Every structure is written in C-alpha cells, then in structure tokens.
Length: 167
Image (tube, rainbow, N blue to C red):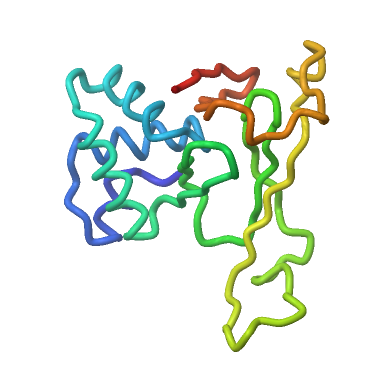
C-alpha cells in the first residue's frame, strides 16, 4: 500500500492520526472487523473511541480507499484492496477471509439471466469452505449451517490467524 498520508490527500481527506492508523491496520490485517480495527488502532495510538474508528472507516469507504464486505452471518469486514475485480473465500469454521481473483478478469464477473432493467457493474462472490488451519485442527464440519455461528472478527497475518468472537 502506498503511504497512507498520500492516499488520504489524493482522496481529498484530511490527514489525521486515526485515519493513518486505520489504513495501516487494514493494510497489515485485511478483512478485519471494525472492532478488530479499533483494538489495533488503540494499540498504535492509545485512546481512540470505537465511534471514531467507525467514522474513519465510513469516510474511507465513501472515498474509495477502503472496501466494506459483508459475508452472510458475519460482521462487516474492511480491506484496502479496492478498485479491482476480486472476490472472497471465507472459512465456515473460524471466519478467516482471503482474496480470490476473478477468473474472468473483468467486471462484472457474472451476468445474471435477467437483470430486470438494471445495468450491472459489479458481481460480489463469496466462496465458503474450511481454511487450512481449521482443517488441520479437525474443525469445519460442512453440515453445520453458517447461520448458527456467532459473528467472527479475524485479524490475519502471513503465518496464521487469530480469532476474536463478539456477541
């Protein structure tokens, strides 16, 4: 990710410490929930309200710096990968989320049989399965409907994932 200050300026947003911290957290931990982002921003900056983080996320989504995704049965997640044509794969067991490039390569990836007069410019696809860590741990029974899970917030790193459950 380019310098958060430069990205904020280019989007016409004021450069503030919370905005820089949110973009930094999301570049390191894509697909994080707002609560996970808020906790990580507090580690970086000290005291910052959850509402301030929600406000920063909303401003960044509106400016096109951040993308909000909402997999079924899960809290909204945020990422800095925007402006391309990609989808997501989500673990049914722990909620880990990863990017999947579109196999077609151009938007929209899918064309509905009937668009009912709509002009389609995007198709959002979520693939569901079980991540390698959960498979190794013996988790991920595909017979369990995802609607029975509690919302999961996942912060990823390059080696493994940490999960936090919210009620």
